[in-house]
Length: 197
Image (cartoon, rainbow, N blue to C red):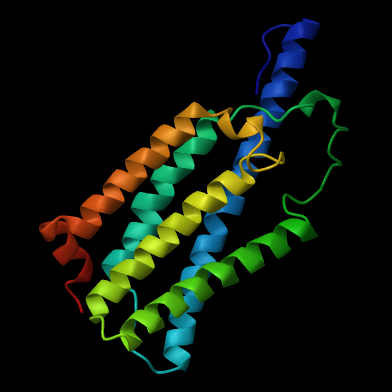
């Protein structure tokens, strides 16, 4: 960031915007990594148990490319946290992630993978075909990502007034849900996502 003058107000705005961008980059990383780890856990568990792969390559691409990129746009419009200018400066060399962040990513990854696998196995045990069960797993992962987005958007309580500080996040989520419905129910898209089964 380059300042074109030495006005104190300009410096204050630059610090404010820099802290907001830093926070949103960190939130984006905290959002993206657990989903990737969850997919890795699902694949690893399936290989270890020598079972048919519940997610196909096209579905993994959908989760990692379409849904991740779409939902992550919400962080671009995320406003600054309250009291952001009252924080102490970060120490030089301080890591981006602390122990709490790593723990949070670990348990979110495990929960996503666990819920997806349990739902998939339950559907298979009920006689549901593999393609339908696989589609349900994809939907569960996407819904989990949406829920997790609202969990890490702000440090405030989930259903406080801060929940509504980013209206564009709701538009982006609506778009993602529309895309997910098309993937699930439009025949050509559904066939594309499950054609390897």
